[in-house]
Length: 169
Ligand SMILES: Cc1cc2nc3c(=O)[nH]c(=O)nc-3n(C[C@H](O)[C@H](O)[C@H](O)COP(=O)(O)O)c2cc1C
Image (cartoon, rainbow, N blue to C red; front, side, top):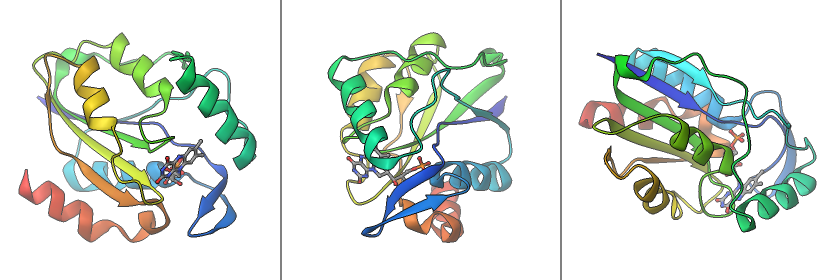
């Protein structure tokens, strides 16, 4: 059985340690690639069909609307045979205190029953927020780990934290 590292990440403008910066690669993408490098496995990206705005403030509003509507945004088809995997590293940014709604779409599309889910959440200070609770509510028959929170601004220097987390599993 293999590891699946699945992530959603948004590049463009973001709020980083108190200032708006433009990211060439999203923080969560950086972290997900490190997990693949250290733990091995297949990497899959959740790419929403309708791109979120690259403007930070517009994206904040788009994400708020989706959360309030409990939306399930569609993403580009993922060629994943989920039966090949027993461990799923689910990597996402904290948006409004939980997972972006397109991650919920993914969780409802694939049957993760009986699998171990390792949530990895990049954020600007809210940690995992309510994402673990929300994840458990959607993936009732999966084993959901307490997960790893990473400060988004420190994504590129998170090797130590990631290795420590993986070693403890
Ligand atoms: C729409 C939106 C909502 C966010 N909400 C939160 C939040 O509630 N708490 C928090 O700590 N960070 C929040 N952030 C910051 C992101 O979680 C953080 O920058 C993350 O590392 C971004 O990952 P990415 O570059 O992979 O998209 C938010 C960012 C965006 C764009």
